[in-house]
Image 1 (cartoon, rainbow, N blue to C red):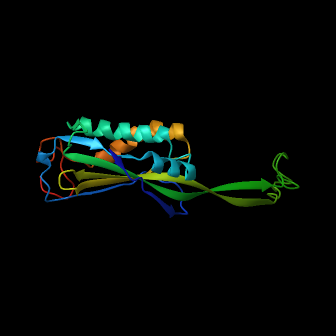
Image 2 (cartoon, rainbow, N blue to C red; image 1 turned 180 degrees about the vertical axis):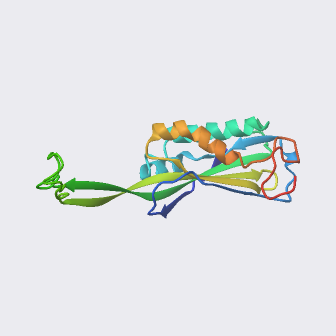
Image 3 (cartoon, rainbow, N blue to C red; image 1 turned 45 degrees about the horizontal axis):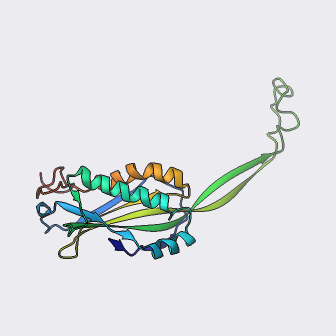
Length: 208
């Protein structure tokens, strides 16, 4: 199953922070009717175009890790993967964010004329602290957040979505290693199991 790969470029000037997860779901949907799923993957053409623009984030290593993580999460909730009229279609999109790190470099002129190595300083005076200058150097880098949409395949309606910030980084090896746990954090907000209408874990903000 193929789908369009959506790349959104969002400028930020922030220090990297803790992964933030957001989610929502269709309150009127009966999740008990869903037992099978499939994962929609980008077309080869879309993948190639995105890879040319963001090669360190959108690449086959990260794509494989993402798809495997999505399959693992759905199967862990009891769903069966099938390409033959699945009940649910899982679609993922990557949102590219430009973030900024600030590195401080301080250059000093030494301990001062009377400071430093002199025991007790000069007649108890510790001496000058010396002069120093601090340079703040901004460094831009890109990260990829993940948005996961789960559709009722038969009605083509969205029943759940979850998003996680900073799932992907410019280090493909590090990204692929961290993807399973980060996708797991997103799917912790998916509260149902296959064939069960009632959530298997309490939904925040609702009565038990």
